[in-house]
Length: 78
Image 1 (cartoon, one colour):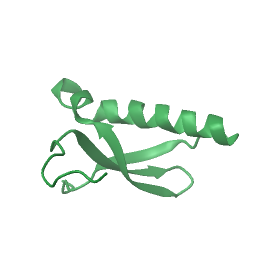
Image 2 (image 1 turned 90 degrees about the vertical axis):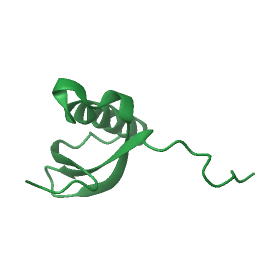
Image 3 (image 1 turned 180 degrees about the horizontal axis):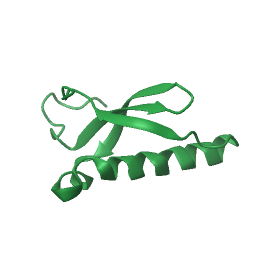
Protein backbone atom coordinates (compact mmCIF):
# COMPACT_ATOMS: atom_id res chain seq x y z
CA UNK A 1 0.00 0.00 0.00
CA UNK A 2 1.31 3.45 -0.91
CA UNK A 3 2.29 5.94 1.76
CA UNK A 4 0.72 9.35 2.10
CA UNK A 5 2.82 12.21 0.69
CA UNK A 6 5.05 13.84 3.29
CA UNK A 7 5.22 10.86 5.65
CA UNK A 8 8.83 9.93 4.84
CA UNK A 9 11.27 11.60 7.24
CA UNK A 10 13.64 13.97 5.46
CA UNK A 11 17.36 13.80 6.07
CA UNK A 12 17.34 10.17 7.17
CA UNK A 13 19.94 9.26 4.53
CA UNK A 14 22.74 11.03 2.70
CA UNK A 15 23.50 10.01 -0.88
CA UNK A 16 26.97 9.50 -2.34
CA UNK A 17 28.42 8.88 -5.78
CA UNK A 18 31.22 6.31 -5.65
CA UNK A 19 34.04 6.03 -8.21
CA UNK A 20 36.03 2.79 -8.19
CA UNK A 21 39.67 2.16 -9.16
CA UNK A 22 38.60 0.48 -12.42
CA UNK A 23 36.78 3.67 -13.49
CA UNK A 24 33.25 2.44 -12.87
CA UNK A 25 30.80 4.58 -10.93
CA UNK A 26 27.76 3.90 -8.74
CA UNK A 27 25.39 6.77 -8.09
CA UNK A 28 23.17 7.63 -5.14
CA UNK A 29 24.49 5.13 -2.61
CA UNK A 30 22.50 5.59 0.60
CA UNK A 31 24.29 6.11 3.92
CA UNK A 32 22.44 6.69 7.22
CA UNK A 33 22.76 10.36 8.20
CA UNK A 34 23.50 9.53 11.85
CA UNK A 35 26.90 8.09 10.80
CA UNK A 36 28.00 11.39 9.27
CA UNK A 37 29.10 14.70 10.70
CA UNK A 38 31.32 15.33 13.69
CA UNK A 39 35.07 15.58 13.31
CA UNK A 40 35.28 12.88 10.63
CA UNK A 41 32.75 14.58 8.31
CA UNK A 42 31.82 12.23 5.46
CA UNK A 43 34.69 9.76 6.04
CA UNK A 44 32.47 7.21 7.91
CA UNK A 45 30.48 6.89 4.65
CA UNK A 46 33.51 5.24 3.01
CA UNK A 47 33.55 2.47 5.64
CA UNK A 48 29.80 1.96 5.39
CA UNK A 49 29.93 1.72 1.58
CA UNK A 50 32.94 -0.63 1.74
CA UNK A 51 30.95 -2.91 4.05
CA UNK A 52 27.98 -2.84 1.64
CA UNK A 53 30.32 -3.67 -1.26
CA UNK A 54 31.88 -6.54 0.69
CA UNK A 55 28.43 -8.05 1.37
CA UNK A 56 27.39 -7.66 -2.27
CA UNK A 57 30.66 -9.21 -3.49
CA UNK A 58 30.26 -12.11 -1.07
CA UNK A 59 26.77 -12.87 -2.41
CA UNK A 60 27.81 -12.52 -6.05
CA UNK A 61 31.05 -14.50 -5.70
CA UNK A 62 33.18 -11.67 -7.10
CA UNK A 63 35.90 -9.71 -5.31
CA UNK A 64 34.89 -6.24 -4.06
CA UNK A 65 36.14 -3.26 -6.05
CA UNK A 66 38.56 -0.76 -4.48
CA UNK A 67 37.05 2.69 -3.95
CA UNK A 68 38.93 5.56 -5.56
CA UNK A 69 36.74 8.42 -4.30
CA UNK A 70 33.35 9.23 -2.87
CA UNK A 71 31.47 12.50 -3.07
CA UNK A 72 28.21 13.56 -1.52
CA UNK A 73 25.40 14.15 -4.01
CA UNK A 74 24.37 17.79 -4.27
CA UNK A 75 27.54 19.30 -2.75
CA UNK A 76 29.66 21.51 -4.97
CA UNK A 77 33.36 20.73 -5.29
CA UNK A 78 35.82 23.22 -3.79
